[in-house]
Image (cartoon, rainbow, N blue to C red; front, top):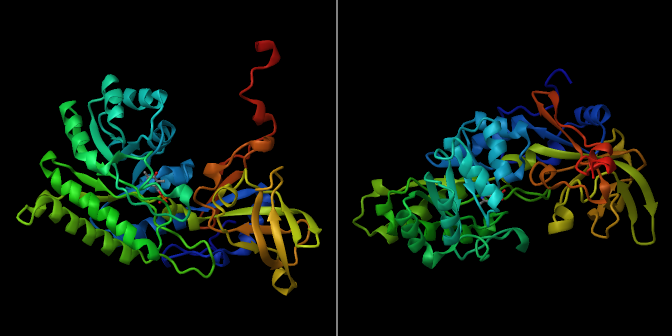
Length: 437
Ligand SMILES: *Cc1c(COP(=O)(O)O)cnc(C)c1O
């Protein structure tokens, strides 16, 4: 692949890239060259998604939730676009800094942070440049003990949740953030500790759709009210999370980003006036911040997988592929739906068969898709799994001693390896050898 032929360009920027929009031949070439299972991430599409977010939210602070896809290729691409990094762990902070995010644009949002994470982040040379977000009064003390005296943000539990599955709805889950009614006290306590409190933060969950805009609006309004109430603190930002949904089903409409942006802006301004009082000076209102993860990367990635086994059964045809729940966990964990497509040249002319597509892991949950109509599959066929760019490679694991897949980054038709395929030998690299013990 030496030219850009067949790849959608980033100058046309539709609200979604469907699995059917990906060109089959270059994907087949990549599977031939790098083997399967293989994640393919189009950095051009990541940039296009960043541009759409930027245009829909002018004036807002835009960060990327690193946990959606922390491969260096993606992080460098977004650091280069001037986006900030929202990090959930010390390892993400390390990766974000290494990929070129300036420390001033890095936020570390510690959820029940392990001591080792706090030691690392508080001990960084650039610790006083990044923003540390705490979700419990307890964490304030732990951070102070480590001599941190940099910028601080308080994570609030807004009491409203949203999301495509109960497992990703965080807004009302007590694990996340300081209870709304106690947030102002925690802000005061942080100031007593001598911290510079620069922000408030909340995240409702993942997968906000047009239908769930009311929950999002309510969260933003509450955060605006709180920000208005504590405006004397001199906050510089109010982060209202990510969670912008992408259409996983081929017939699902894309999120209306402009509608989300308008609702967000209006709810924030209305909430702030409520908290600050009608006579308050609007120029005291802190900047709105958003931090999507999925929206940047989901439709920029596909997973390529090869059919190993085709087995007719009385109920269905079981299509065994070389990618399973250790490659893409979302179907097993969230019952998530991902589009599937045969990349075989003759596929459109084949009859269709109803299939269950399952992986090579010894678990009943290891099924990528059930009851799907596919062009009559044969051994060796190449399939593509859509919307695999977010929470795909990132959640891959080694269960069943399965090596993790490779990742290829493409841009303008040029492909390069972004993560090597793990080897069988690599699986035991952490175990002391017999002679060491
Ligand atoms: C996961 C997460 C996000 C991003 O969620 P998406 O659904 O990927 O947009 C943003 N903020 C926080 C705090 C998160 O934990």
